[in-house]
Length: 338
Image (tube, rainbow, N blue to C red):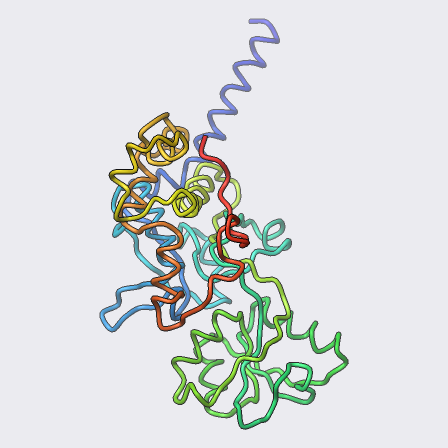
C-alpha cells in the first residue's frame, strides 16, 4: 500500500470517528425518545411551570421546536429547571441536551466554556426596577442604593460596570436564584432589582402590588438571549440552530400554524424548501424532510410564539421592538433556506 493510500484511508477513518462523535447528541436524543432541555426556575413568558408542572414560554417553545423537528412531536421534551449558577455545568456534564434559558451570548461563554450559542431567541438589555415611592426617575439617581440581583450572571457584572462608569457607590445583594432576588426586593431588603428588561416586566406582574413599582428608562447592556449547546457536536448545533431559524423564516414568508398545509403548495420556492415540499434539507442534519413543517404546524412561527408568550396576547404585553423581523425594522433574521 503506498503512502498516499495509507493517508487517504487514515483520513477517512479519522473523519468517520469525528462524524460519529459529532452525531452523539442527536443519536442519544433519538434513543431515549425525548429532548432534555434546561430552562429557568420560573420566568413568566419565557419558561415557567403551571400548577400541574406543565411548562410554557418563549424559551420553552424553542425546546418544543427541536422536539418537533427530531420526532415530529413537540411534546417529546422534558424540562430541567436550572439556576444561573447551575445551567452551564448541567449542559457541559450532559445532564441536559440544550439550554433555552434566557442566557446571554457573550464572547467568553462562546469561546472559553465549551459552549456554542445557536442563535438569538430574544434581543434584550438590562434595566432596573424601583418602588415608585422612592421618587427616582432615572438610573443615574441610584447612588448609594442597595441592588438585588442573581449571582453568577452577566447582570451582576453589568451592574458593577454601570456604577463604576458613573462614579456611583452601591451595595449589591447577590442571591443564589432569581426567585430569591425577587423575594428580597419585594420584602424591602433592597432598593432596586435588576435583570434583563423582559425579566423586569415578567417579575413586576407577580409582585404583591405591581402598580407600586416602575421600570426605569435606561437600558445599560446588550443581552442577546438564545439557545446553547455543547461545543464539538456540529450536527446537534445545526438541529437546534435551524429549528429556531425555521420559526423566524416562517413568519417572514407568512406561514402560520393555520395555513401551513396550504402553504406547502406555495409558488415561492423558498417556502416549499422550508416546508419540505421541495429539496432534501432534513437529511444532512439527520432529520425527516418535513422537520420545519412539523415545527410550524405544532407551534406556529416566531411571531405567533412571541405574541402568545410575551407580546400583546400575553399578560406581559411586551412590544416587538428590536425583536421584530428585519423587514419591519427589527433584528430577527433567518439565513436563506436553500
